[in-house]
Picture 1 (cartoon, helix red, strand yellow):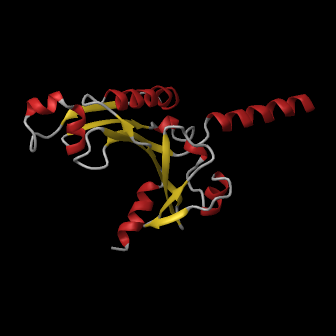
Picture 2: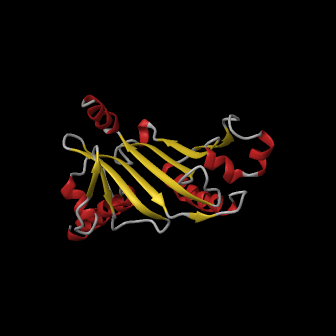
Picture 3: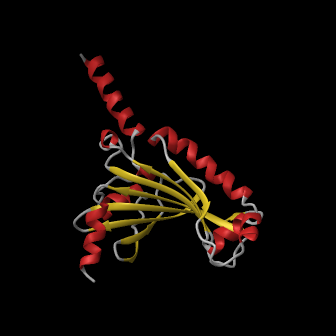
Length: 201
């Protein structure tokens, strides 16, 4: 009997580890919960439900983490921001880091939609845009993103996650040699969390 209980306990712990929330964070966490997930370091308030944190379960690529936590909804949104990545005009280096993220995310969350295309020709000639991938990212005429939408069947399995997105940006329009990668996770309570913010306007 004891052996059977031990097996069930191990299976339960294993299931938690497999489907743990991103960066060790789960939907609805309070400030106190997030503080524990950050090794006792209390989140630093920014504004409008946003807090800067450094979770214990961090990813080596990402150096900045922001969470949205409200009094009513708890934690409802997560954003990770990578270190700046030096890149040539074709964005080779940042594209490689971007691609490295897609494989583990696909294994965990399934198929995704990827967008890497020029969406505006307002600022630069098309030929110049084609020759400089980084330039188009910097001036905002190109989108390089990947998106997941969690199905209803997987909703509970992924702890209430509904959307995951990854993308590439630069810090300013004049920066064309360095870029960063952002990743965002939205939970089922995000709509209510953002609605509550809008209500105070």
